[in-house]
Image (cartoon, rainbow, N blue to C red; front, side):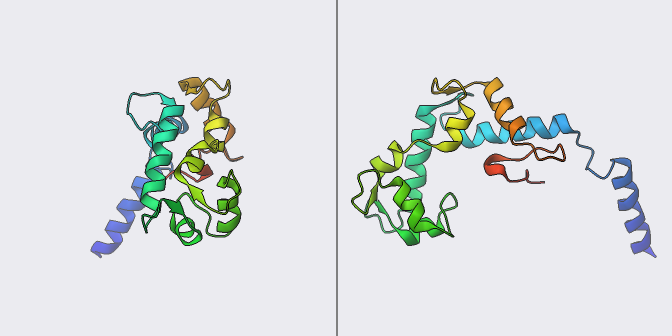
Length: 156
């Protein structure tokens, strides 16, 4: 009997919130914007710049270079959250700027970041709040919801 009342209470709570946890689209949008800034703003000054992208890449490279040989390898790319599990060789080849079959830190840093370039509309190496908002609005799914970084739905 207690379980029925508990389930009823949960159902009524969800119904009162419109089934969306009481969060409106603007709040979800602001949350996605905040997550994006937190993910990319490595120096925590509230602005995303080319320097942030470089620091982010250095961190990604360091964490992913498991054998500390200062090169990224296929198995390391497969395991990296930013890498490509399906096409690691193609992914590595896209970073191998001097075509020597290896990807070192400098090549990893020097390859332009596609996501940052899409955010930085005027290509001034600084992503303004307006540019972030434009980027997120362009990435909205057709149902009007907000997607997080990488085009994934925001985490609950």
